[in-house]
Length: 144
Image (cartoon, rainbow, N blue to C red; front, side, top):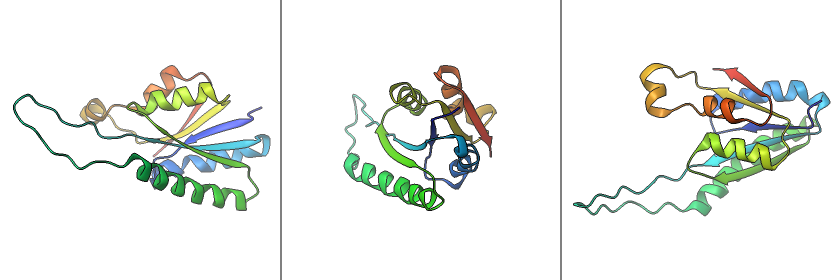
């Protein structure tokens, strides 16, 4: 039924919990796609103050993300699963995940949720909610 499962990862153990469900469904799946969205910090600009921020090397961040994803992919491949990895750069993580799913014929998205509520959710937003509202395919959430 599902030919391509997208599993967004952020480097945390919590995010990797979604891999359990992806592996369980993989008997019927041809590929698991591991994705990490790199979010570069925006520079702070004010009319009165000129702030100097350290320059973020996006290529270095991309290389670190690819290295992490490849390590996870190697573990899964050792279990006989077909896995690919990708890294995208975006301001909005949820939109990047949804856009990736649309552009790469993803049949199912499996992701962990931090389970934030109240003020924390208001301040940090909810990637899970954004993915759920805009996803072109079914979404499975794994609770923390």
